[in-house]
Image (cartoon, rainbow, N blue to C red; front, side):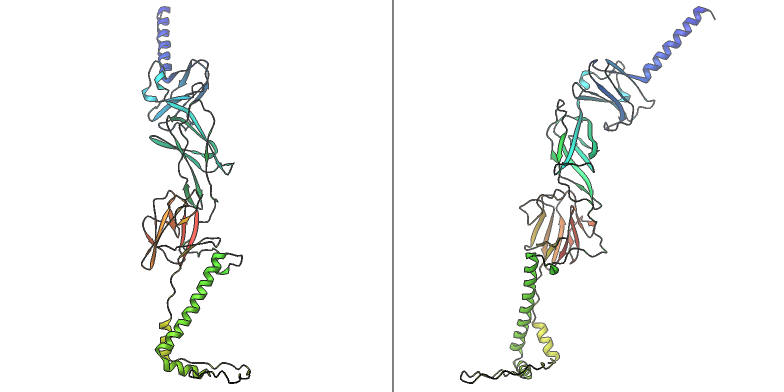
Length: 391
């Protein structure tokens, strides 16, 4: 092989090598004085930065491309403009990318979660924008290549084994020249509340045992006692009215004369020593008469909270929710929707149903998909609020 032939062959090999290098790299056109970041990620997931990542200041950044580009995208951000460009790897122009019209999205949006003035690191932030949503851990909720336009954010966490999602909060329309993190203020209920166990009785304090000034519990106890006394008195009255002869005989056995009229002029009888009362045995007919006469006390349906507080179901239809205008309001409880559930009276039953709440309504640990007839002792959970149904 002559020298001339060797030079020609060497030129061909160098040209082939140059073509191979061009085919395996991408020329990213950048501003020579601005900082840029470039990375490759799965399509539609610009927040995933496990692929190739490059940072630098240059008029051209040469980015090595993977052998298989299907299902992958490349994103570049500019610190100077606050904008980003994203494109599929298998559809890039040969002369360089991006062009001026490719800078369509915001470089990044960072969201910090606070509750009662304290930063929240558990759970996730859900960013919602026109056409989709994305999630990031609350500890570092930075979203890249966010479409321009209004955005909303929600806080997702777990409480007592149940996934809770707060209602969306509007964060307005982020600007590319505003590096300040957007703040998401949330009301985080106590995390770690035990999930209700259908096989285990509810462990709230019984209202009958309250001795710490719980006015509602004491009033209910007094009303129940008065109702019982009134029922017994009414039963005796009905017994006397329906069977006067048997009533007279019973009073005579007790040493009382029902026909005796007191004489005002007669001296008062001397007090006698107490003696044991004679045991009175009523006949079957008498017992049946008294039992039939006793009225049935009206039901007193209520929701009993774990701390002993009581919410009476005083109307045939009551809404449970966070709104202050509903029948049973848990104002300020962000895990509960404004109108969360409904409890309604159907003849002698009480029926509960969810009204499209965000976090659902649970009875004995099962989420409601339809109406459910409540039974005394049923454990109910609205969001992260637990209570017990009693009558």
